[in-house]
Image (cartoon, rainbow, N blue to C red; front, side, top):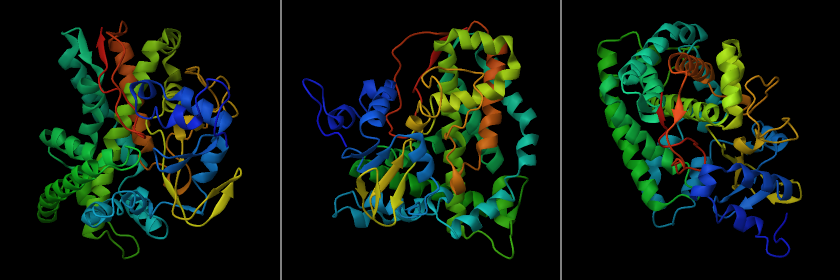
Amino acid sequence: MLIESAGDEITIENSFDQHLLTPAYLANPYPYYHRLRREAPVFWSEAMGAWLLTRYRDAEAALHDPRLISGTRIAAAVRQLPETVQPEMHALQDHISTWMGFIDPPDHTRLRALVSSAFTPRMIRNLRPRIQAIVDELLDRVQADGQMDLIADFAFPLPAIVIAEMLGLPPGDREQFKEWSNDVMAFLGTGRPRVDVAKRAQQGVYALKGYLRGIFRQRRQSPRDDLISALLIVEEEGDRLSEEEMFGMCVFLLVAGHETTLALIGNGLLALLRNPDQRRQLQEDPTLMEKAVEEFLRYDSPIQHQTRVAGEDFELEGCWIRQGQRVLPMLGAANRDPAQFESPDRLDVSRQPNPHLAFGYGIHFCLGAPLARLEGQIAVETILHRMPALELMNEPLSWRVHTSMRNPERLPVTF
């Protein structure tokens, strides 16, 4: 692993750790990933408190390596807080540890089977007309203005409305659950966890559980045609979700159901605005839309890294990874690896094949991937059709301060 460079060049540690979450890094992390991949593809980051894997082959292997586990990663994050604070964080740790993405087999296998029986491909297909109607309603609201914020006016409300309706949550509550989920997600993406962020996340957990407890009570008394009602009654070989698992599953679906799709739509539209040749190609040939959405996912991945914890000591590329240390497969870096993708820094809406890792890999592959793809395809196709003269109003943009979730905070456009 490179520790120092010659002459005036900065060290890998300086080029990554000292720039992590700076405006320059948030605006474009990919040059930092490229340098890590060339010079230290298995890199210990003090700022992240984890090993970073930036090559495609290493990231893909890590996502299904039985030595790297998911079930202890929240405990590993809490252990990075001061010892005096750790006992206060049991509620946060216990809650996030029930999320399906943070559980290992056999519990993960059981939960995924239970949820999959309610979250079916047929349900997703049947959502197409409703998603199209929501897209049109959102664009109708701003059409006469000639301008909008693509994030606040479109990329956020679309998936938030869809997942809220699927779960059966009142539409007027989405701003509130966005605030709570942002607090929880912040804990998972600030590098080494901070005490203030952890405490806000725990308050968000308390608020979400209190909110959902009332919804569960209503659905038990009067079931509806929604996902919460289905989860409350779904059974698989005599098994069912406990109430704690229900809380974890609903919060996980609520957060994952809008965060990643928001980023997919926002990042994808920004990529087209910055690459007018690819935008013209897509407008002239809408049959490329499915390939284009896959390329948006690869080119500027909504989730930049996943997290695992080493279940045992092992060696990788001359680096000893110790039991209990966090390991981060850097999806954003892997999806720009020139060993896997030709001209990886070029947006190509007709790219084929495109084996990106944006939705993960292995047993934790994103359950909601078909829904995110469908929402992305409908959203981008409709905007390009209804607003063919879409233009970015100003740069530089302000980006979300997060190590994993990547999207601009605002995206002002005229049309």
